[in-house]
Image (cartoon, rainbow, N blue to C red; front, side, top):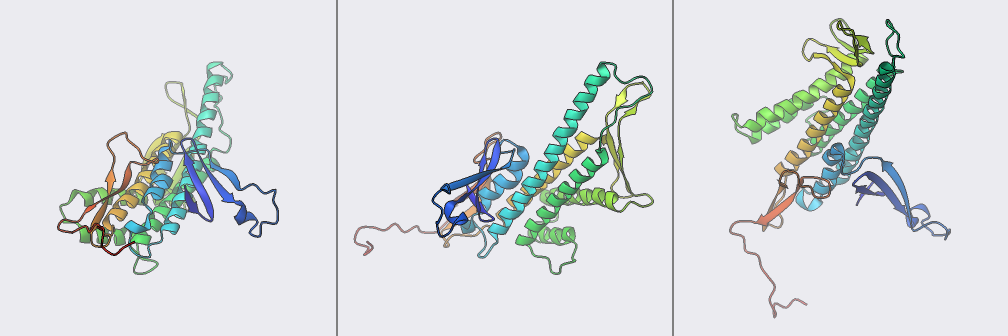
Length: 314
């Protein structure tokens, strides 16, 4: 349970809901008929959905002010994570819709309802794909907004990837494998921006191609596909559903990695007595929908004072 945007959010296993108290709706409590708690279902996805785990669940777990720098905007980070979860839920809805349409088409094909020389048609295919890519781009923007909460850019138009990579290079030796890993995450964000740009600003050599059902030389039908033509970040033709699932998984991983890494790099000592870091549960184990949690230990050499009778404290 966590307050976001003035509402209390609850992430259950198979859904996410929010609630407001009667005092919020009717501050003067003039209407006794308003229930003490008014709930609303927010998302049809909960802690059993990987993209909820990698956005909302991990943000709820790690956004604890006691572990983070003074003044860190935990509320803003939670808002960004909630928005990312909603965007990825929309992508998941699109994938479910497309899968259902393809299943229905297979039934019709197997029943022989498409005569030779006729191809199935997916209504509004390009619109569905473009909208899903827009949601993925929004998650990309959110991930970079999270990064800027930890590491503000020197100027608004400074390239985020260059800025973040320079910071990481200042934290790690040049040969550290984390830098290679981090660079791969930045490239994934860049690729997604390229795909969105190819949709919005097509030009010679840059194009986002959505193809409905087609026929293979062997005579069978090919499900809808996407392809990106680009001089730097091309994407070979692949199944539409696979494309959306892969991109959603990639951007979810980047969002999670940013939260884990940046929280870890900025963890604060508590009173000079305890040190903290983000720890990971064993493979397959989850706590409140995430594999990650804050772990604290006594700073080596620190003395933990325990009040004894007679210390003068009541």
